[in-house]
Image: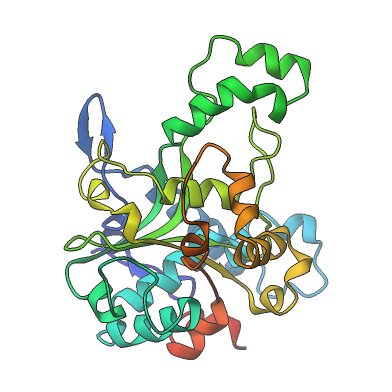
Length: 306
């Protein structure tokens, strides 16, 4: 029997969760990506075992609770549970429209899509732990501009002769419509902040990376990721409400507001992209909270209310 993974943090079966990992290329073929499933199963097993052995955690050492209770603050579980709850709800079209209006405005800031119903009507797919390749234009630019982005001698030496100075970018969740190429790339945070550098580019922040891959075609990826239209793609930041109310307490809050208010700041962080309408691109950036999802659907993030 395909049992529910966890009644609180992931109330779905293994088969349901597995269906939300996109196919990946292995030895030239597109195959099912099962490697992520073990992470969720192992985390749930450790958590449930710890709760059974430690029914009263009051006053316990945080050092002892940190690993077995990781699930309580793990973005992988939060975003999978939240988005799957929304995805499988029969009211998802109405609820997603409401949330996207709150994040991006009444009208989608996208070419050829005049309403959120236009965006969402069709064969909607949801994927987790998706990796999108770093843009070739950025990697070529970085090879030529390395000394402007890195100053540690052994790192610069290591870059010599390498063509690939940045690996693929991790996207926590990707919602996409196979019929029209519409997509939302979701970066989810619980307590963590965005990373603020990569190995060879000391100035490259995680939000800029995701916006960069959002703007790139992925024709060589497995179906259906190759169907995503970069011109019809949005970036959504998903965080606790306390950090949206006080955005300066996290780097992602400061960067997000800077990108929204000053289009030149995006151009500075993506110098390899020329002649783009940054005013239009900044409209494609939205911010929602876990509490927004809960208020829209009380089954989302139910652990927030005790």
